[in-house]
Length: 94
Image 1: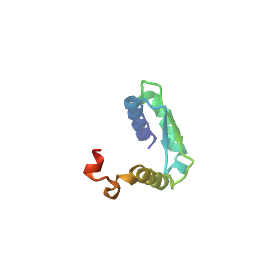
Image 2 (image 1 turned 90 degrees about the horizontal axis):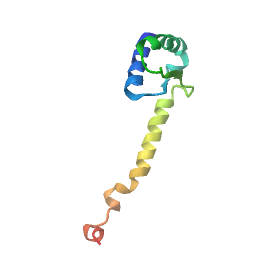
Image 3 (image 1 turned 60 degrees about the horizontal axis):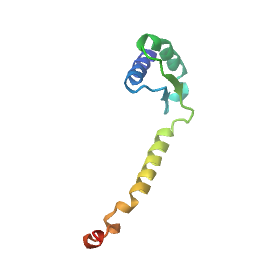
Image 4 (image 1 turned 180 degrees about the horizontal axis):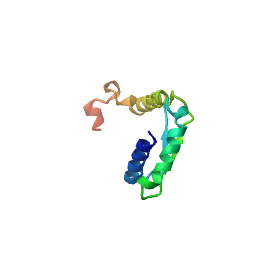
């Protein structure tokens, strides 16, 4: 698993020039040995400076929390885009 993670991090590092890759979600708490193996495999897999690989301390609920935060932000940004709040065409041109 560490070699697979190193391969994914190597691709991200090469394509996007990232400084850090964060392993999150339910697997983050027990991912220490996998992250250690990935870090050991990275110098062979990447010619650029290797991104840092860390485990998130936010827990398994972070995916749900992020989804709710994104939904709230989208609702706030688009609340007035509803047809109820749109001006009639003749008023909009004035």
